[in-house]
Image (cartoon, rainbow, N blue to C red; front, side):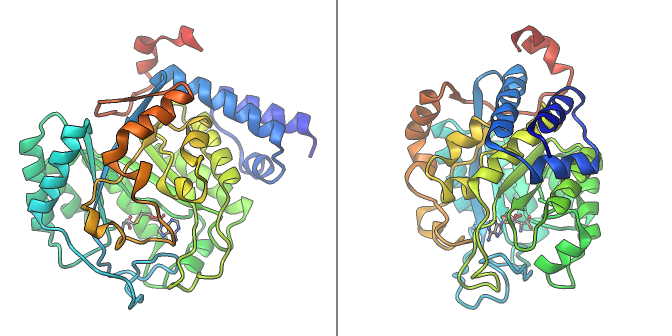
Length: 362
Ligand code: SAH
């Protein structure tokens, strides 16, 4: 495939925000450094158009490492007897949020395994407590697949957003990453339910997960076009030594940032995090992500003594610049590349938001 034709595809995506299946496949399969650079510069323009040079931060609180699922890639899978299990109390979660609020966080993300020991009602009480204490903050949940009634209960309690990666939109690929009892259609249906209830939703997938092909990734882009999520979280697959995928190769930062930039062109106003996994495999991962169009970073706010226990993959960073307590370092790193971390809920900006932020700037 000639570079000229690939660059033409980039311009088409930049203008129409949509490609056909084969076009996604070609762009991903035959990408070159020059094509990537073009995608990055277009992606930065769109991010700037909606969000200026602002980077939103979310305080990530990992509330439980118990999980009833057995995903083949994940370090806290049920079948890992060596995983260290913990569950935070409501009070511990509120304390984390208080520390985060003082540091300038206005979004809290409560993430965890699907832990039956943390009842639906307890989650609702935890959320309600946060809502009462921080009326000016967004509350995001990332607690896996639940019944629609449960999502509704949590929404009523005050949650605003929900992150649930679809993981892969190809059912055959999904079946190679998950045990048979997990159903990709059920998971995708959760996302539609969440949207219907009124949540801002985030989906996403791992980059370079075992057996992933450009065809699979094209399917992911088509699914995202249909779903129209508010957020898309992607990061490289990183092996965990106590899982069936211990010896599978990790995804690359290069492909991750390329796909981040394609997502920005597909959905110019989407909220796009430069994820922890990207920061884990590349010390400059955060910067590279932002320069490819990402506009969100999620530093770790979990209590120090549990951070090493929420090990989804080997070497997952949770201290240093990854720590919410060291926000100043991250601020400096972003300032060095021309971006500014802001104290803001960082809500999704609808397409009409262009009028107020000024299209003239691109
Ligand atoms: N139980 C919640 C949260 C899962 S952890 C849920 O089901 O949504 C958040 C994300 O971490 C997962 O969606 C998955 O995409 C990612 N993840 C898990 N194991 C990983 C690994 N080995 N490498 C990279 N990312 C991983």
